[in-house]
Image (cartoon, rainbow, N blue to C red; front, side, top):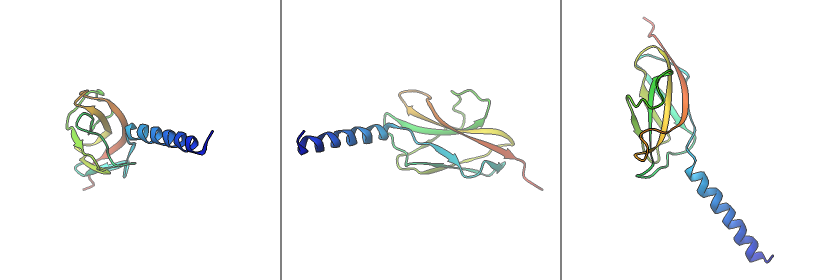
Length: 122
């Protein structure tokens, strides 16, 4: 195999790997797994949010037992975002849920992060 075809093959493999990585949804984590009701839940993504007009991302903070399709309090995250904030509404066990493929699909869950919301000390 000539060196040109070796370089061409290597470039193709690198290009396909990079292209497929662009389609992979980001992972996320919460800055702290326990927050006080009424305060922010800070969410960090492992890579900037990608997406296009036909593949938008959105997050929500819902009780852990809520339906996967529940979009209550949905907030879009935009191209380039590396973090987001949601207000913890009340005490309980919650999940931050990241969805993609909007508007193609109304919901498509790609990641979750658990959050415990506790009462404010008086």
